[in-house]
Length: 340
Image (cartoon, rainbow, N blue to C red; front, top):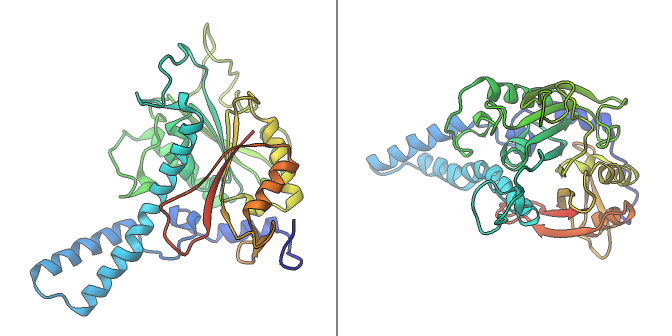
């Protein structure tokens, strides 16, 4: 892959060090610099709207309203836009996962479908797991290298298992939304701390630095008709219908990226139907495949042609590709690739 000069290689330890210094929250994993909480911004917005209704607004009031409406509120909607974009992308490719009657759902779905499995790579605090994957899949394996993030994801999963369901909008407080199906054990999430360089999706339980931290939700029981599951994590190495990689593959060098894709391909339960989905920022190709190195988190932002070069080298073919729409201007273009 060509680049502007010789690029430094991503440093695993430096990358983890950076992310472990960030808040274990949606803002932290999304890299949003404004530290105002959702409750604070909602309260400020309410107070300022009340001030406007009482009379002529001051310059300070106007400036705060601009801050809220132009910067903060759009930031709060970004996780929802991202999650809905990913869900729609997946349902277009895998319509049988639709859980409600719709134009894309098969008229005659399988009478007794097996439990579906997804792998969430570089999962952070469980944002994609909770807002996307648990709405479509039965069981999720969540993998994250940064200790504060995976600990927060596990806390959120356990809170969803213990607490009664609540009606909380994603835009109100996404971190407090109970995870779908966990309390009634219809779905499950298994939590693993591991680096992408060492993790083997085909054998999550095998060696390396991978450490299983726990599981919430569904557990199979022995008996007629039950899924074989000798223990709480008995399905750990049973493969996946989807491997989901979002905003994490920049931590891999080109050789590590290709090797990781090869392992992901081997982890698909059904090579003809399973998918590896990559959702990442793109820099410009500028005449050919290239990458930009980010010193802050020791990562690479690749161009469209650079991604396609890596896919081809790993033996993956593009099934579908799509730009994520609805994000604020000034950000990198974000693109989704479905591969098998």
